[in-house]
Amino acid sequence: MTQARHGTATPRPSLWSRAGDWFLNILAVGGVICIVLVICAFAFNITLIMFKTGSMAPAIPTGSLAVVKEVSADSVAVGDVVTVDREGELPVTHRVVTTNALPDSGATYLELKGDANEYADQGLYEVTEVRKVLWSVPGLARVIVYFSNPYVLGGITLAMAALVVGVFWPRREDDTVTDESVVDDDLEVGPR
Image 1: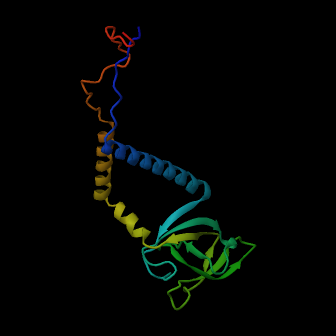
Image 2 (image 1 turned 180 degrees about the horizontal axis):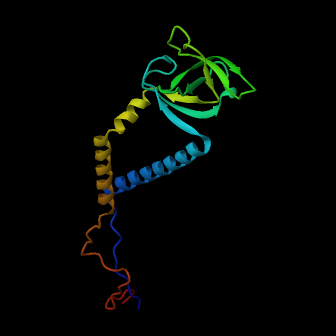
């Protein structure tokens, strides 16, 4: 005499539940990528700058976001695009026209010119360190400025909180589901 086990298969999660799970997984991977990028930025002195003017157009148009790395001024070459800090003014990001390193003082004189400008900047910049543009993405600065708006950030926060609550909210158990370990003693299986 053999006894049969009664139980039902666990119900399949709904399409919305699976979509929410996938979305949360994608967000988790994005979070890990952000953490790695922040660590790399600190380790390698890499920052972001946004272009508010068109002085570097067409190579780097207004609204571009650039990744820059802090380097020694004597390591830059003619043709590099660098950001130079100016006392009492906003930094300037232009292309290097000439460079003249002064080994005695450790400083370097740079002549810069914006690609869209007719003439080079007035005067030379005496610097020891600059931020060299590694690469840029046109239009990305506008996206970052949009997402920096407190109302947009608040809306995103509320939407993510609702998604987390929706995915992890306890589901109602179906009353017809039985424990798989329950055995019906009255049921006989086999030939009679």
